[in-house]
Every structure is written in C-alpha cells, then in structure tokens.
Figure 1 (cartoon, rainbow, N blue to C red):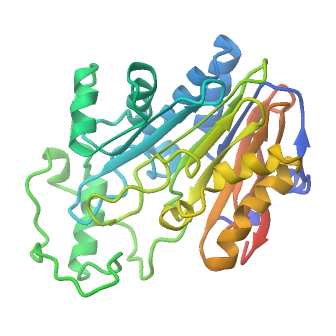
Figure 2 (figure 1 turned 90 degrees about the vertical axis):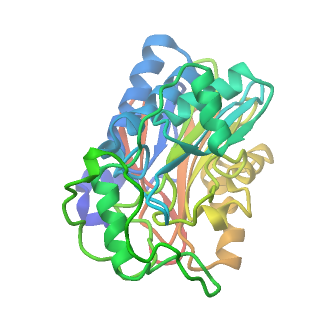
Length: 349
C-alpha cells in the first residue's frame, strides 16, 4: 500500500486542502495513474469534449496496463479459471445516458466498447460473451487477454491450493492440476510471479483495482467513467461495482460527478458515487459530500477499503477514503496532473 513517504513534501501539502476550487475545465482520476490523467487533460484541451477526454484517458490504462499497475486491461487480475475479464462504464451527465460492459472477454478496449453501448444502443449494460459479440459487431477485434504475467500469477495461486479465494462455503476446485486450456504462446514460458500473497488482495500499488475519472468541461458539462479488470482470482462471472451507474461512477451536469475505487462487492451495495452527487445537490461542499458518501460503508463494513474522487460543475474537487492512503490526480488550468490525497474518513489511512 502506498504511504506518504512515497511522495515529496510539496505534494503532501496539497492534501491539506479540504475542497480545492478552480474554474473548469477539470480532469480528476483515481490513484497516481499519471498517464491516464495527462492523456485525458490533453484530449480535453484539444477537443473540448468531455466524453473524448474520459474515454481516451481511461484507455491509456487499457492499451498499456503497466500505466495503471496491471489493474486495468489485459494481462492482469486473472479469475479463478486463469481468464482476465473486463468491466467498464461511461456516463454522460447532461443526457444521463450510460453505456457499460461487464465480464467482457477477449476485447481489451473495454471503455471504448462501453461508449458504443451508450452511443449506439438504447441499452445501458451488456455482459459476458454477448458483450464480446456486440464488440465484434461494432468493429472490435478479439485477442487473448491472458499474458505470461497473468498466467504465472494464476499458476502460483493454484499451486497454493487456490488460496486465498472468495468462496465463503466449502468448495472443491475441479481443476486441481493447475493446468488450463492453451492460452497462447505468450504464456508458455512464464516466469515465476512475484512474492506469495498470504491475505486477500487489499488495495496496494500492485492491485489498485480501478481507473475512475470525472471530467468537467469548460461549459460545466460533466462525464464520468471507469475501467477495471476486477479482483484477482475472482469467481468466474463476477462483475463488480465499476460498470454499475451510481456505484462505479455517476455524473449529473447540473451538480457534478464522482468515481469510486475499492472493494466493489461491498461498495456497490451503497451506490457511493450517486450518494456523493446527491450530497452535493443538497448543498454540501465537494469534500463533505465525498466523505458523507463513504460513511454508511464505514458503519457497516469498518475494515473495507473504499475511496472516491468527486468534482462539482464549477471546478471544485476532493477525494475521500476508508482504510487506505489514497493518492489521486487532478489536471486543470492551474496545475496539470498534480497529486492530491483523499481525506481519511475512517480506519488506517
């Protein structure tokens, strides 16, 4: 998990601000994913389109997962069957339209497929193999999302007796031999994965879960979205909070937007992105709204790691977090891609 000593003193001072305020435009994104934030800001400056900035910014994590700790896109977070699947969402806060995909297979550009759902259909969410077929129908190619890295992670986990895992009842894995169907030549000579993990995957710099982003245009229009490959060694078929409107992200151009990252199985029960925007609508400051949206989670699940970035349509922004040091990036006319830290609502931050 990142700690404050990873960042220069100047950046620590930025964390002291409660609600920072500058005039829009603005790009705010989860974690210290510089490439995503910088790309989103560049596109916003060049095109003025919030949706273009959102999609291209998040796509930086999909096209090169090393930009985002391999927690987004191909080659990361294999499920219990060694397969990498993707969730993504985009929301237009002016039209209130949403496009999302869940458990998307063999198509790395998940957030671009989500945009096609928004712009090319009257649906909001497509899932699984049918989402993959939809992606093919609108022009996306398929390719393996498994890499040497993800396959090696899975084999080491399997060799440890499939521990830890997300089953809460007795379960016998049918594939005890730690062999899966061929996944491509890239996995044939996989090097041994990094050090064995002995606990369930908390949020740390190697498993940061989600790129979430909120973009506010010069005209105060708000869009928000997410992209992730989900929990490592998740049960096959699992879809987290990221593609769920109001849970993974939410946007309303009359107010603002929010994007979430953390334990999605818990967070989706509370719709924290929606809650944050509603708190802003009621008159709370951006920072107070961001923190208030996490309070119910803290009450019911006090050890859960959960974080939010929030922005209003006038350029105010903030972050809040439970049980995790939470760096996030903000680009605006004053400070392109500066690092800030979320206010600790509860727990060890």
